[in-house]
Image (cartoon, rainbow, N blue to C red; front, side, top):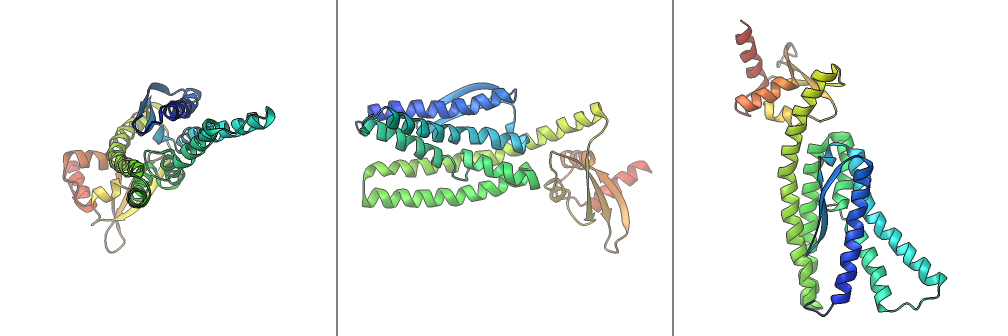
Amino acid sequence: MFFNYFIELLILIIIVLIHELAHCCLCIYYDIEVSEVKLFAFGGVAKFRGDIETDSKREIVIALAGPLSNFILSIILIFVVNIFNIEMNNIIQFCLVANLTIGIFNLIPTLPLDGGRIIRGIIGYYVGIKKATYIVVRLGYIVCILLFGIGIYLTLVYNIEYIFLNMLSIYIFVSNRKEKNRINFIFVKNLVLKKKSLFSEGIMDAKYVIAMEFIDIKKIFDEFTLEKYHIITVINTKGKVIGSLSESEIIDAIINHDNNITLGYLIDIYKQRLS
């Protein structure tokens, strides 16, 4: 409105709302409750009651829905203009460019944008959600620095309006950082839920890990994924098995002891308790 773009602002609000509603439709399909849709200065966000990140395939599909809605709207707009021979005026051109821009921009591989969620879903399928988030967060930092630099260049060389890119890069940087902290909470919460699921269902796929006795438990915890229950076989420097630890024992040790204690030390603690 400050730059006399009121009509364009209304068009952007509608486009962003449709984008977010596309996410909501997929959430409804997956029986995920949508708590609210927020529209604000940098776009919009749909908030859900549940952790869509815990299922890589589901996160990819839900994230793709937003940009796809923009591309579909662009195709429909071009089709209508051609069929009814409508003159390509400034408003129609803006609708087309805005849809394509929002769709493409959201595919940038950084959180909390859809592109970051898609990349995290793909990587998370192989290495787990926690490691995938750390990788995408680091990638997001690089993207933010590049976007900030582009914003400065365009602002100084062309027009003050491009300072919006600098503000946007700062917002993405902060949101990217929050996502890293948020995923740690989600990961721990779902590990606990996974343990309850094991007790209720009585069966679960396992992942076996072999580790040296001098490895600290924090490093082992970082190897955990949500898809399987972990069994850790501990060996000494001579290659001899000195004991085994379950996922639950590692989590309990992190809660009750220092994160830096070694697997060998933890084995000794449990042996002393047994004796």
